[in-house]
Image 1 (cartoon, each protein chain N blue to C red):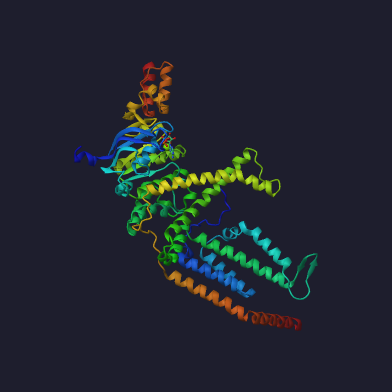
Image 2: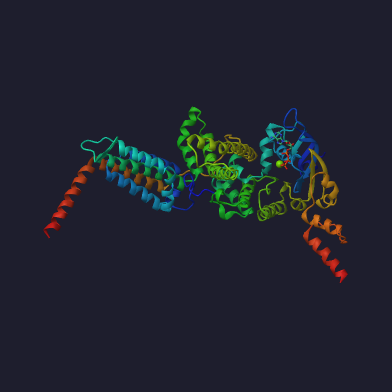
Length: 285
Length: 289
Ligand SMILES: Nc1ncnc2c1ncn2[C@@H]1O[C@H](COP(=O)(O)OP(=O)(O)OP(=O)(O)O)[C@@H](O)[C@H]1O
Ligand SMILES: [Mg+2]
């Protein structure tokens, strides 16, 4: 592997195995994959398939039993790298309530930069920037307890962004939100990925969200079973079903329409389906 | 969401008091409490009340919010007051005597003192927490306790623990409410039965709450690790405490208040006598007319 390649790879797993206890089964069994810098990867799989474990391994909250994990070429298992690794890979967890350390938004966002020793003046700038990215500038001095779930989660994201990580990992960060809150978060994440060129690894149970990624990785019982562009992954609904995964809503509707004898192509996006149906209707009339 | 947990909740407005250094406010509160307990006259007490009212107005706090902070302890205060009233032994004849209860004139005065003292104490602490973010408060404490670092006292860790505890109070309150409702929906009864029954009824609330608190703590620990927390010495501080003209004002204000209280302690009786005399003279004047 030449130097050029190492630099553009954000995260690399090589034959990683992990188990929580000596005598339990492997939560991750021989997992290898890599995420390129600037890529948006969705990680899906049913409950207990090892998604959270993967996220925690990336920034050293857990240590691999065997195999090698690198973040921008740095070995995560080396304790000396841990700090650097955590600086470059930030995780946003599922429950925003359990991620905040302070009763004031700006103090909470300041927590990360304080930990890595950012000078005071710069922390102020970082807070400003992070809050503007997630669209919460107006709430700088409010208390998280008074915010909605989506707003809280955006603050949690800002708290991670303020460390200026190169990789943003979201572990079911939209799971507790309503559709509106989910969309808010997705918009922020997509913008970070497109505009700030941030590498995103998104763990989700919402197939619609996985569709928006550049690439989708499917985990099943601690193994990677499918990997590729979401459009390709979601073509194979039978296979997905064996991994206890469903199609995105539109894909499912499409399948049902086909079952009812409508001659339309497989669609995954609402616009696509609308076009298909419209053209079909035009043909008929 | 419980609305009556005003205590420990920051009230975010911009005011003179809010901008005062938390260290000043902490010292102010300590001095204020000392003044309250040293105060021996009604004049002094009135001055203390006036002082607190001034601070509340300066802080742009709704009076209702501050008064509400007493609600949680009002039962305790009234109970203490009544005990005092019934069992305070004064000199001379009791005003009312019934079985073991004797109410003396001094008892009434003493109870009024005690109650106003306690109410002012609770309200002044509430003003501190309403005008100071928990983080600022802990920063202030941390800064005031810094000398203890030299005897290896974990000042920073303690401050962080405190700020997190404060941050989780509303969250756990909400959670308690949820659990109570969930248990009620399952037919649990918290309102009837004797003391033991009621205490027993609390267990199904306490255990889920404890488990959930541990789960939260674990998640929070992970989230803090993920945000590079290591407690190491490279840590910087975003909010730097700085004394300003406000703190000078606060110190003067406190000095005046304390001086007033002590002056009243020495000359309050004389002042009262003077007032009575004046009042009598006034009455006499009107009587003449
Ligand atoms: N703290 C733990 N101790 C022991 N075993 C654990 C622990 N956390 C997870 N596991 C086990 O590891 C496996 C993978 O769990 P993981 O949390 O990675 O799944 P997941 O894909 O994130 O699932 P979910 O969709 O429910 O979040 C599961 O079988 C689970 O039981
Ligand atoms: Mg998980």
